[in-house]
Image (cartoon, rainbow, N blue to C red):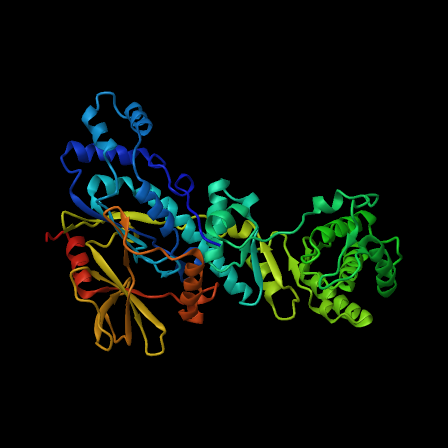
Length: 537
């Protein structure tokens, strides 16, 4: 399905920002510096969740925002009311004329592995404009990257075989947060989402069946308007599904050692109603009353009745109790029932589970022999409970071609000065060695040539000889236009999985991973040293 990005949804409004950007804009304008060429970098200082990697995301929304950036009359009128009353009216006329035609953006492609200090975005252009872009770009990149990374962690814990569904819209931080979470959990490795709007706007595969309210809304006295169902394939008489289910219920209850009156009639009526609506996609939600005494026999009666007509049930879902233990018991009973009634397909009916699944429970459900096939996760993916913010920052690195550096009292908050290039160095087997930041004016590292670099935080340099060198930052936006087509969400998702596959198991593991190295070129290290010491350029 094609992605759709209507401007009214995708582009953030320019005033969704912090007031101090406009007070600084007035200061730049008043000082005659509005058009000074400047460059900012958007990056993070630590990987989230105690992990060793981050997935870059949010670039598409950033480009949509930049292309639509413009302050309308209502925006300017509000700013005039928020700023001092004696502000020169010419400043507001300047704001009315602003756009991003002078802005250039280089960035990591969506789905790229990103590491601390390496820019996710480099934004250059007129000082006043690129300053105004800070908060919107941070808002668009930080949460998207956090969600994608969280989803990737959950995928790594679950392993490649389990089907993961994101179903957290009702737990998300508002509609925008819900749409972002559904979109970027898919990029990070989930298979589908319950969010219909994410399917319409971004092409995310959507999935969903029925809730307990559907099941409990039936009492068992309801009579379907049309209980007849035709065979799945070929000609043949239509069959009364309700009557067929009642026949199968007796056989199933005898096999399971239950009385025919034990299974809840309302639950059975709900299953029949759903089967009549979706004979090719029948799934039972088994725990509205009792899984063993009601949900299972009712599901089997309907599934086997459908089976007589050539249909195969697509699964069952559990939403309470010990999910692992119940799934194993269900699989055992599916196998014995399949053998009893000679219906081999019943053995492999997918078992889906949900119910506040976190990383610990996911690891339990993913273990060998769990018998769980599909896992629905809501709160733990959309709210990122282990770390609710990535902590991205947007820092000035040059003005007028001169490097700028923030020193501060906290060494961790020092910035890296100057316009930079970033490269990933790989070994002969394609393994990732480290990322290198260097000044843009330097020659790129060469494959097969020895390179002396300074790992961040190290007291001494080290030498590395890469077998391959990959530039990380690509030119995406210039003079108000895209420089190359943005990949589709599905393409970015595939790229993210490829990127993760190249990361060593030591760096991928969720707990106590090995830290990936980011290093500085000797020239950049020397510049940092000079500016830190207060030496002028």
